[in-house]
Length: 169
Image (cartoon, rainbow, N blue to C red; front, side):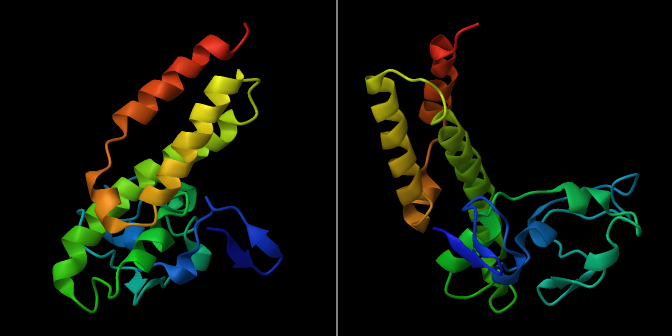
């Protein structure tokens, strides 16, 4: 999935808040402090949220929400929103399923990004073929709620750890 932007194309790992149901503003918990201006429990919409938009987005850092500025969902938010026919605002019973899908999608996107980065390594032909197979598999997982819900990241993580044997020191 490549997303259009004003300047052509953006990475499939870039967040696109305009196509997201504000999942980070719903799903993530945070504590008031240096990075966040108030306490928020997971599953409770941020009180700065207006619909699916942040009412203080242009002033996040100056208003004490540097954690929001620093957060990067790797494109998980818009991917999950696209997989559901309705949003948690339209059907509150979707809050839990969308939050869980967002958690899982962030994991998938993180692994996909690591696999994409690994493409720059001088891998043996068999390892490169495995990398491409994992990348293809994760792309399929990212496009289907059923596959996403049953996805186990451990085999991919273990395979990625094994890449260290291909890196010269």
